[in-house]
Length: 137
Image (cartoon, rainbow, N blue to C red; front, side, top):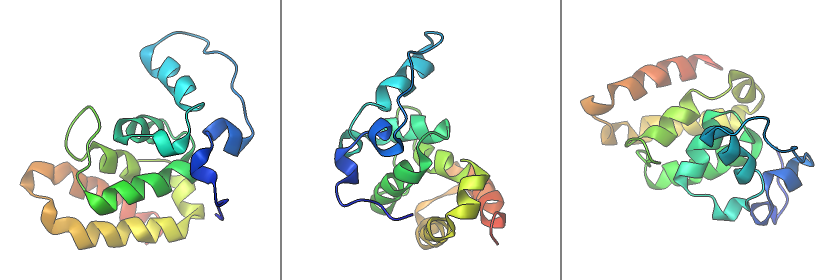
């Protein structure tokens, strides 16, 4: 997918041209997702990416940001645990990865390149990767 030059200065609402109405119920996750749709992408942190990718929201725009973070630190972590961003990327919507094969290849190559940084404490990431690799493999 081709992105505009200034896409990181915009919110998901701007980029997707889709303004959500207020949340139908006020769980922390729902209200957080609604707030994050209004936040400029350049201001997203790892936890913001983890939350939204984990909910399969805005993948066209958030996966490239997540890949930038994972290139710097394959075990980038939000609020849960080391590697939680990678886990969310590897388990995100299969249909996205079937259409965005270039990004899929980037994740596969990145995982293989950085696999030495993962150890037995992160065994589940290898399991998620096996399934991820089969999407277009």
